Amino acid sequence: MPFQASPMFPGDLYDTTMRVAANAVAADAVAVNATLTQAQASDQASDSWQQFLELGWQAVLVPEASGGAGSTFADVASIAEAAGRYGLTTPLVARCAVVPAVLGAISGRDDVAQMLGLLAAGEVSIAPVFAHDGSCSLTAMVDAEGVQLQGSLRGIDLSEPASHLLFLARSTAGEALLLLASRDQLGGSLQSWAGHDGRLTADLALKATRLPACAVLQRGRAAVAAAERANTVGALVCCAQIVGAIGAMVEQTIEYLNTRQQFGVQLSTFQALRHRTVEMYVAYESVRGMVRERVVAFDLGDSDAHAVALLKHYLSIAARQVGESAIQLHGGIGMSRELPAARLAMHAIGCSLQWGDRYEQLDSLAADMAAEIAAEVAAESAPTAARA
Image 1 (tube, rainbow, N blue to C red):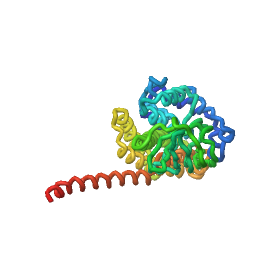
Image 2 (spheres, rainbow, N blue to C red; image 1 turned 120 degrees about the vertical axis):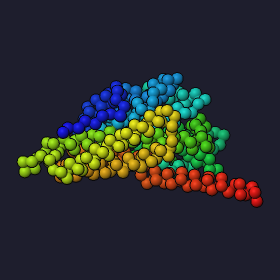
Image 3 (cartoon, rainbow, N blue to C red; image 1 turned 90 degrees about the horizontal axis):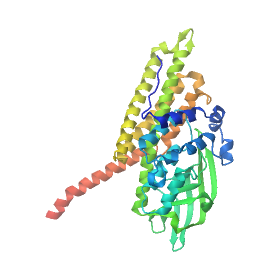
Image 4 (cartoon, helix red, strand yellow; image 1 turned 180 degrees about the vertical axis):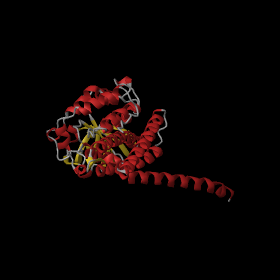
């Protein structure tokens, strides 16, 4: 029987994103998985991304005081899920969730509030660059006049043009710095490549680049906390994107098995194929429920990074398993990039690598556990040391 995936957070945002994604030119979807599109090569935004900017998707999480909607993560998750159903490689997670979440948490800065207003209006688009493990390849020399940067920014998502970059650097004294700078200010040498799912990723090499003092938004522990929040928000909303891709793959696989015949018999009548499809369906319903619950908890103030890391780890495994099943159940045509299910499989796997793959999430979980054990050991040994 046919199957229709239900959205985690139905509403106008989901429906509108579905329409924009469905209207994306099919030829562009094929080209973007093979090489750089003409829009990327000319540093021009795609039609779908331009529509997202005009619709104000970057403003969803921006506070109302800065001209945004001041909405919830559930609304951003609904946009990400709908985009994931069509395998769109637009940087929705980074630009519409991570950046507003990081900048919106900075208070007392008029320049940040002004930048949030420009972000909400779609006049700027900021690409965040944060390593999942908190490492940094940029060294900053701080003086009275500003900051001088030396090193490289790695893994910048430039699937759509970015006017600014938000990133971390380390001072010569080891202090973390959160910086925001325009592409014109940074300059540098850019090397880019297209991933298997069509994402355009770049490394930016900087040599003695000078930035004004106002480019430093936060320092020390506050800057580290901002990077940690960026990775947590990115991982969570990315999970919503994966849910959309998995749901669409289940739909398309069931439709294919109900339509395709072999020796006059529908493939959907083969027990082995039915069992494999049920496994895909169970995986989808499981991740859909888990992601929805975690997004709701996040909106209620439970921003547990440990829980998000565990969720992202599980979603990364499920994305690969469901993607491989979708390709195999489609048979030989499943290996074709022109097949929507195959592109969705690549998209889901590509999303699983964003904002910390399953191994990086395991490292985070292990580090958290080690810290907890160390704290317990210290607490237990404290009374003994006091008595001695």
